[in-house]
Image 1 (cartoon, helix red, strand yellow):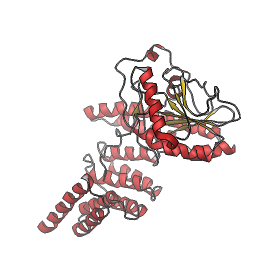
Image 2 (tube, one colour):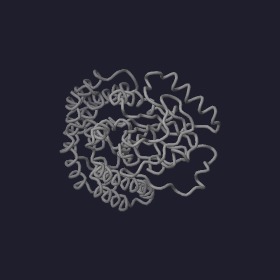
Image 3 (cartoon, rainbow, N blue to C red):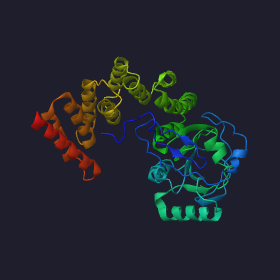
Image 4 (tube, rainbow, N blue to C red):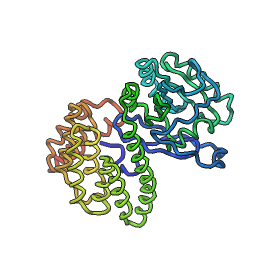
Length: 383
């Protein structure tokens, strides 16, 4: 079961104060970001020329702050030391969720300078914003066990770091290596391995730079893809959408992109044969990825644009999802039950749905599952 079946336009994003947005990271560990509200008054930065682009391997921009909130201060990113800059805000739910993880890393690497950069607080009163950050940090205490700074002036940190790197969603982490170069950019949940390698001096910054450039290229394509999707829904012509997805896949063979292509080919493009070939390819390399397998199965079962459904693939993918979660995730079992029911095995679908209910906590999802079970039982009575 999924709350939505439209993968193409369902990327989880956070919006920066300038109204721009950034696609969610394509990793299972990423914590979804919450939408931000753009300011009522356009920031003066719009009058400025675009900042110099920043990528992995580039020299780190200057470290400029308005006020230190917590921890021993320093003025520059000192060569020979590793620095981790964590851009966050007090209102950002995913940022708050990530705080203990950043603290754990600071404890593991006491010689690394971790700094929480509060550069995206909402409002126009700088005094009030700073006071809010100070109270938040004070209330967190040791849970937020690293340095924290406040930066209200967007020209100091937001533009040369976040905007320049195309990272307008938070939380966002920059790791600066011993040579004072940006060595990694991403969500804090994904920094453990890069940080370990950077500290050890074994990080392949050239490979990381190439990957980052590829991801940015795909992100740019996705922006055009969203426009193409809106146009295609009006005209019914998905040719440009398919071409954009194929172009993105040449840059990076992302399984999420493959699922998007499968969805378009199996749905509005009415090319199911190629869609199922792609589905088999995704399934072959993601048997242990419960989330990916569940997405694949539920798309085949539930997407209303599909006029032909390969239920054998859906059942196999859903089975893999259940096995990967040891049959303890009700949503996964619910998906398998739906595929089995559509295949015509009503008795097994009922048994599976009952299993799903047994491992699902009370709430809206369980209520929905009960209604589905009633539908299956009614179908058996009329069979």
